Length: 337
Image (cartoon, rainbow, N blue to C red; front, side):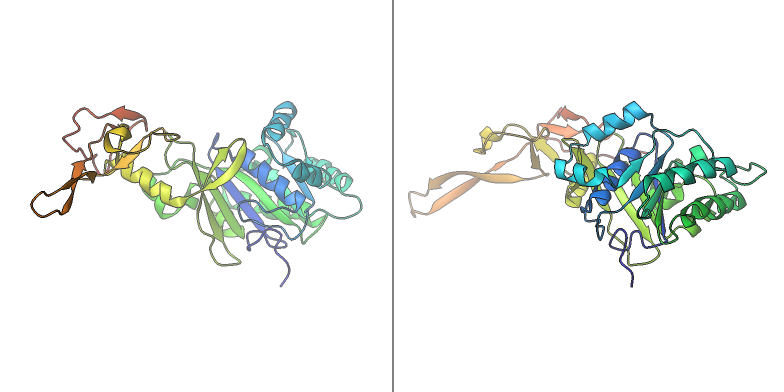
């Protein structure tokens, strides 16, 4: 078997990834960070290239100065940046359509970018800005137009340089219900359904809760076993993977099964340091109190102290609010929608 371009089986030689996300979710920033690691031959969130990859990034959305600002804000190790510098070629907001004239312009730029060795990955971000369905100008919502664009534009462009190169297409998503997201998140991809049947792998970045900064990264693979969903966020400018178990705690807190107390000294606990919420507590929770000695038997008896919540998580805004009555435990409705 040939080596994966991005392991495990995410991008195979001649394969295609469609990477979807809503506007402002951080899709282009995430993609730029991933491509920089791939160009440096370094793993990124357990996604691994076999070597430093030569990547041509046809970028049709962000202007030059703001694109440069994003690079500077990624806060990557200098070794990664230096290694990627010769392998990652990024265009600043090309304003063209991938018709016959646009194809000629991009093909010339690709051949100029990599003279000695062909590229390994062609990236187009986003599809919408360069879409050319057919001579009749049909939109991306038409299945035949989408197939024409993928076959006669994108793949022809790739095949003219290196048929074994992989393709990554960035694409916008549409709004779907929360239930649909949970059951099949890739229904959110905008445009014709033929797009989903054409790619070899799908990636989707979305926010499960608009009041929080963390995102879910889900995968759909044709050429290998499924990849587990990742929970990701930015920390000090870098994309990091978060513990999936904390997602469960967040849901329980939103529903009211978990609340918080900010008076740990009343229970003999150390003071709070980093958490903005406080210590966790659940209904009828108790902590050991003071030890007492039974004067008749000499037995050591440990009393318990009921823990009362001082704060809770607002299900509408995600804010931490004071509890009105700590003696009454209120659960939120199962479905607020």
